[in-house]
Every structure is written in structure tokens, then in C-alpha cells.
Image (cartoon, rainbow, N blue to C red):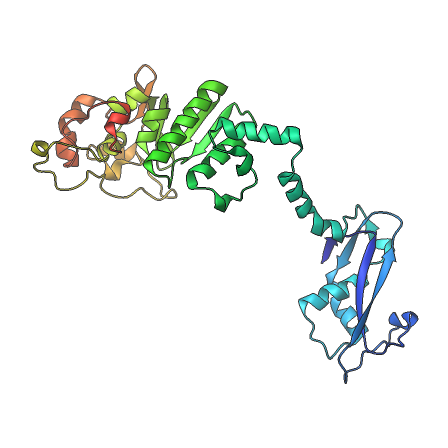
Length: 349
């Protein structure tokens, strides 16, 4: 097995030996032995100087051969020693490519860190300005902080700042408010909306929080089991859903009701059953095992996206809301009596 190991033109080879009178010429002799009766008590370094900066290949398949060559019996053949022995396999005629010094390999991360913490004044000002744009207080101090020194909301703001620094045309936000309290959620959503309006950046929001969708989105695509089942404007989806899964999803949202409306309600509305395994094959609609309106047509033919109104599409054989509106309460049994409002009013915060 050949492994390319980057290093400088000066390779430091640590050779352990017992007798201080050992000559360099004897080092490469086939009968070189290290005493089994005494522990190695000193060491010396051999530096190989190459005129060019190169990269050497190490043939680890020859390690056993090198081990026999050194005849070291008093020291276990460990991984550390294996790397030491491997250096003996480096020869000038195996030099190819580019050498990156061992010293540089060690120092590069530190150099990057120094460059990051000691920014050029012009660049530092740009970073501070970007952090100010996402409403981070005292940005001059924040740029020197580690992530664990920031709150969850601050870390989210820094992430948004990093993304917006590239001035993207499209920002994809996957659950941007997860694990944040309601107050911080509202601040992050306000920030994203402000950046969208000021920078003209489109935002693709991936979330299960319909409240976030209602506050931030103009159009919505509802997905079930990996497929889009309904798409339309935010008003279409929230106020006039046509696909049973969307209807069940919206009616599963906790709502605040008056005491006189609470009679008969014993639990939070849910959609019965489980989402099918993505590898499970269905001839018909993937939602039909959980759908109260499923019939033989739903079980045998997968529905196509049908335009139920201008710009509003649903993948369902029964997009006639007359049927759904009459049967939805009895079919799901625990649906709300009436779906009211559009946007944030639907969601309990």
C-alpha cells in the first residue's frame, strides 16, 4: 500500500541506538542489531536534505522487511514505531509532486487561526458590518468569541451573517428556528424577512412549523412521504386546503378555544397511522392507508397534481371540497369544527 506523506525538504529521522560508538556507516548495514539486553538510552537525528520541494510515497507493505532489517526485538512493533520505520523507505528517487513541510502541516491551523483573529483592518470592518446587519450587539467583541460563548439565537444570527456575506440569490433555511424559544424565533424570523426585503434574496424554508411558514412564506409546497402533494399560495394552503393530508396537518395544530367550545374535545387532533417507509411501494396514493376518503381508485392509481384553482395544485382524486367539508369531522373524528383565519392567527404560540 502506497501512502503519500507530505513533509519538508528536511526530514527528521529519529534512530534509537544503544552503543554511542555506532557509526553512521553501520546504520544501513544488513546486520545492524540493537541489543536485546539493554534499553535504548539515547538518540540522534539524521536530516536528509533534498534540493527540491517534493512529496514522497511510503510503501507500508515493506514494513515487515524493515522490521527484520533493524532486528529490534526488545521494543514492541507499535504503530508509532511503524511510522518511524516507514521513514527508512523514503529514498530520493521516490520523490514526486510537492512537499508540504511537517512543520507547516503543524503550523498551518495556527496560522489560519491567527489570520482569523487578527484580520486585516479593512476585512475586520467588513465582518463587523455584516454582524451589525444581523443585529448582533457589540460585533467587534463577538468576532473573537468561540461558538460556545454565544447563545443559541446569537449562533443562529452568526450563521445567517455567514450566508448573507456571500450575497446569495437563494437562501435555503432548514429548520432555522429549531430549539429556539418563541421570543428568539420571532427575532430570527424578523431578521430573515428584513434581509429578504433589503437584499432581494429569495428564501426556501424547510420546516414543520406552520406558524413560521405563515409568517415568512408567500407560497407553500406540502410534502408527504417524499412527494409534493399540494402547492399554492399561503392563503390557498392555510385557508382552502384540498388534499386530505394538508387538511389533517392543519387541524392537528393546537388551538386556543373558549370554555364553551371545549365540550367533547378530549385530545389533540391527530392523523392516525404512520408515514410509510420510503422503500414501500404503493400502486395508488401513498396517503391512502391513513386517508378517510380513500377508495379503490386511490388504492390503485397514484393521483397527478390537479389545478383546483389558479396557481393551486393538489395530488388527490377527491379535490371536491364539498365531499371533504361534509365528511372531514366525522371521518377524522377529532378535527376542529371550523378552520379559521390565515397566517399566524391559526397557530398557538
